[in-house]
Image (tube, rainbow, N blue to C red; front, side):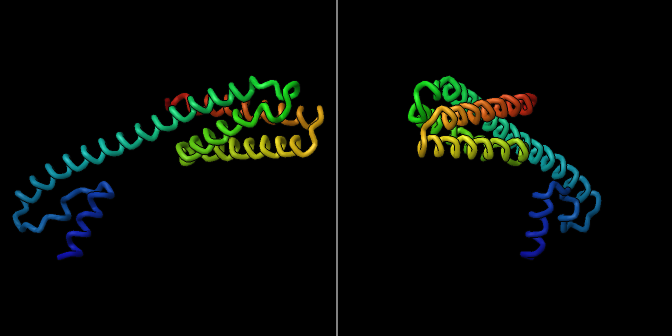
Length: 164
């Protein structure tokens, strides 16, 4: 009996019909009841999938918006003039926002989220190099890596915009 219930449960979860789960030998009542069960199961399964997709999309759209804001703030920091210390807080916010975007969008946009992660690593490496040996060259490298990150965020936003 437990296997039968488990099989029915799995069939319903997989979006299958309830027709195979009826124990009744009366085929006409079984067909009517399975048809009605199938319709309500499909509706509820569809509604649940749609709700999950829309909440996932809403999360991606929200985290992308926050990332755009934090990247704009980071890009506005005059790192070459003010030094690497000026980017510390803004970059910490960007790292946090990228982490959130990756969590929210990795399934749908794996390539783009991997690129954002790589870009954050490049900014981090440039910042570390500039902290170790501050010079115009290392500060320009920080600015360049920030610019690349900003460009990739803009591209990502373009890719995601159809879902938001």
